[in-house]
Image 1 (cartoon, protein in one colour):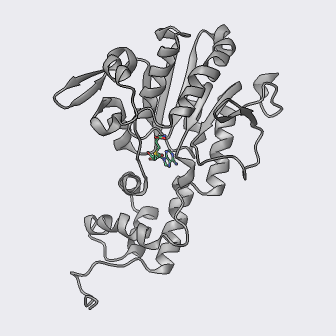
Image 2 (image 1 turned 135 degrees about the horizontal axis):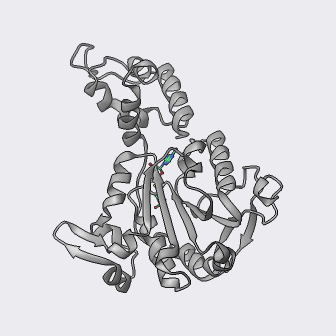
Length: 293
Ligand SMILES: C[S@@+](CC[C@H](N)C(=O)[O-])C[C@H]1O[C@@H](n2cnc3c(N)ncnc32)[C@H](O)[C@@H]1O
């Protein structure tokens, strides 16, 4: 039997409230809640209604839009709206392609700058960032002092965990044991990334829709944005891809997740066919890039 309405009953997310919240979330974060996701959104945000002592999702929508503390509330909501699943050495065929085919190419390209910069955009708790740093070291093509790996995520808690660089057994399910031994030390609270690797990695909270913040990272030789765009709606995806194009050096490459592509996005990226993978490359002579002269 349905619960009678009253102060003890949990509010439900009505269709009209769903549309309002979904559009607000999309405009702010790009995160997509499709036509069938009303109950998923209700489940994710319900605890915020209780925490703020509100009586409906309409009130919550109003709070997010107009309350003086709305920025703090967006931080809370973001933690509930994002999917943060990740692990070290995820999708090994892509990582092989990066190490064996892309890094030698980037070593030539980056030689005059004497620095390699790689950005993991949507890095969750940092596993991808440390994986990339380890692979670059393992390639033997760069000195430690030349390598910068940036990790960014919209989730503040994820970025804090990424900075700590301490992982439990589940994070290592795809990690070659010899690399685990070499680059992590076991301590009572988990496996710690060694200082040499940690020193190459830098983290910051960033919404990928905020292109001004992305500019602070400078130009990149490679960008990894894996398993992020699947959660993002089409207009935001297009905006994010444009940010990546702008942030890459000419000849720089973009890695997407195995189920993601730029198939329906109009973009100046060119497709680069590797032995086991496809990556996107910013053309060396890009008409859209003023830095090309
Ligand atoms: C599934 S994780 C992917 C982690 C890692 N790239 C991997 O492939 O294992 C997706 C991450 O994207 C982040 N994310 C979603 N929307 C974002 C946005 N608008 N700006 C920045 N990060 C976002 C989420 O917080 C989440 O941590």
